[in-house]
Length: 489
Ligand SMILES: [Zn+2]
Ligand SMILES: [Zn+2]
Ligand SMILES: [Zn+2]
Image (cartoon, rainbow, N blue to C red; front, side):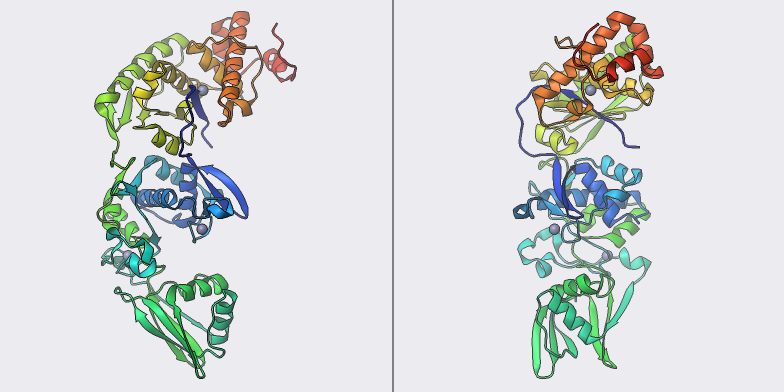
């Protein structure tokens, strides 16, 4: 089940850097939160992984790739496509295991000299990774040099073989707008990369001979005849009985993270940090360009993840104190294992939660994401944001299934002491959930709180709190679903 997300609003100017990506998915353009995108790439590119650490390494690589390549389809009106051209996306096959791999590395990117790295990955490098310079000369970089990979070859050498009628190949090339000889009968490997992969092919037939790049050739064949044909560029080719026979090892372009190798590293106890360091040597995993990474502070009942422990320790102490007093007041237990994450800056918070800057905090299950403590302090919002989110954690852990969103939000606002004059009116879920209009969201929250406050005046706080577990009584629900405009009784 999808976990509901809860937020606390403060009014702040919007910053740049949206936490969402616009993707073209099955012909439609959709905007999705970054972490959902990462989980969908895991479903599309590495759902068969057995190692959790290898999955996490892929999550960091996929996220970094998206941040670095975001906007490459800008002229077409979206950021990234859903094919292997960018990253293969499978939104329908996201499982909680894949969501977890994204959540456990949430927001982490691979950095090189203060910028997100270029993080391609390949199915199987066949024992030697490829230098990025041989495949994408513009993207050559020190951390993408060819090196040997002892891990993927441990499982098997994965040889492959494919043969085809030369006329089939000629047709496939024409479909992709590539020119070959009229009557193709031989293919020679004219140039190879330093790792031994084909880079330039000569296609010959009759008196004609045409030079073509091996990767254009492979993509043309893949698109037309399927990707299980010429699987990578590490192969030999010869002709026999009128057919062209390809025999190779490895799959994909061979650059960057080798999926088969990282799976082996993970299965033999290496961490995702070690996997990324092996395939992208010289980069650093972190939340920001300074390579900041989480440190965990343990409290009595909760823990806090921060990049600046000295500065943020105060939030942990405040949360524990508020958690105890609120739990006693509302007579709901404080769940164990609550985790607070305090982000080092607003952009990082936005990138990771997908929330606009006027949302101060964001809760999923028992994990509370917070804007930088200094920023919350400057808006006098640290205690109110913490109270709001802790109350959500308590209410949500006990809530009846059909408890409406307006009641959950209104109750939390009311209990955390928000008293803004507003109409007693049932707020639409859509108004409470939207993240584009701060003023409309504030009105919706205030009305929800005013409604709960009027219910408390009518029925008493004990009774209203009881409804968290039992659900709303029929007379309240009826009044609320009558769709009549603001009427206070
Ligand atoms: Zn809320
Ligand atoms: Zn693309
Ligand atoms: Zn490999």
